[in-house]
Amino acid sequence: MKTIRSLALLASLAAMLPLSGARADEPRVVAVSAKRFEFEPKEIHVAKGEPVVLEVTSQDVTHGFFSRTLGFDEDLAPGKTVRIPLKTDADGSYVVLCDHYCGSGHGNMKLTIVVQ
Amino acid sequence: MDPLDRRKLFKIAGWTLGAGALYRFAPPALGEGGRVMDLLGKKNGERPTPFTFVQFSDTHVGFDGPPDPLGTKAFERAVEMVNALPERPDLVLFTGDLTHDSEKPGEHAARMKRFREIAGGLNAARVHYVPGEHDAGLDGGALFRENFGETFSSFDWRGVHFVGLDNVSRGKPAVGAEQLAWLKRDLERFPTTAPIVVFTHRPLFDLKPDWEWFTSDGDQVMNALAGFENVTVLYGHIHREHSHVEGNARHYASRSLIFAFPDPETGVPKKPMTFEPSKPFANLGIRRVAERPPTAPAVETVELTLREYAGTVGVQQLLQKGNES
Image 1 (cartoon, rainbow over the protein chains, first blue to last red):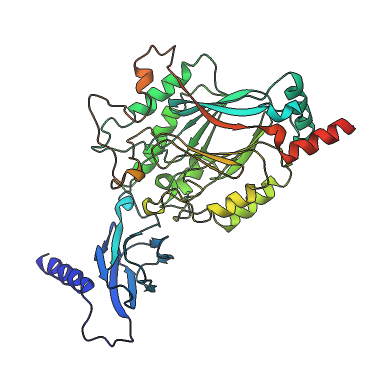
Image 2 (cartoon, each protein chain N blue to C red):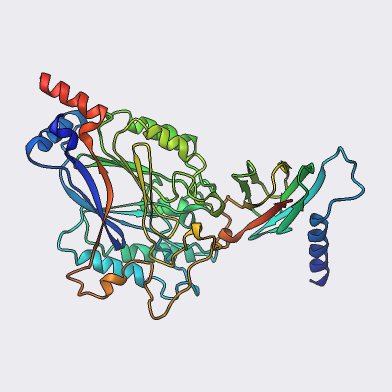
């Protein structure tokens, strides 16, 4: 359990910091895990204008990955990774929801993307 | 000016009862208004005549948690309240989340059975249901169909066409292409003057997408209805009252019969409102009735929808043809 928590903490930290080794013309890839009833990481920070691609994978059942403002609405079949280029052209805090009903805790399954 | 331009010929009014709402469909019977109703009857297939109906929503039978430790009490009180009305409603419409789902084997079916026991006590001529995501989101609507039949349907009642839409059983907040095609076929036989009442679970417009208060293809549904001059959409899901007007359609959310959600415009997070033991039915609406004898339910009059029919293109054409015949 301790190892899992440590890995989750590392994943969160990695999501908050740009990878210094990435080439400037290549998007930063942020891995996102979906499982009932949470996304991991729960918050992603990106710089305005930074090219970012999310790689989202469901660990259990079919989930949704939806943001009206950021313009995506994807289904996440279990075990299949979906790549989503992220719009980072405007400052703001954006909510991403699971919009594929996955059980009675579904209503709280979300993450926040902060562009600044 | 034609006096009909100023006359309110046709209305569905609503009274909040906490049990969602009691609606009165009140077309005029006499005078010029009555003549228009006669013409509408010839055009639409049935002359609109007065009746009442009730909307219940979000009963969540089986829910057990701090936001509402009373479980089905509000639902049971609402049934008692409606049965005590001096005028028996013609219809009761349930707009989803009849039950709170459970993955424990057999438990969801038991909750559906309990729902039917309570709803079965309603004294109404007809009861219709559409599912919410808690009823049909995990199994594609299989359990709902076992209990209530198809997840979407339509029927006519005293000159009004009712359409029940399912925007939950695909897992996503969507109606889907197949149901949209069905809806268009279903509406084909009606003239633009036919009054339409749609009942569904989720809002058919972008009320608050960040709270999942939307239907992704709701705009296509409303486009299919755009040609009709009097459309009322009744829905639930948001556990609070709300009204919205867009084009010829008026959208109304009813309160829930379990915990309430706050107003998202206040900037608060999406969390159920705190249960207050001293006001157990606060925000659920039957608080007012709890203060009165059951034979005299307190009702607060709110205007649900009021269409001045005389000014619409369809009715003007109807009057023209009626005068010619």
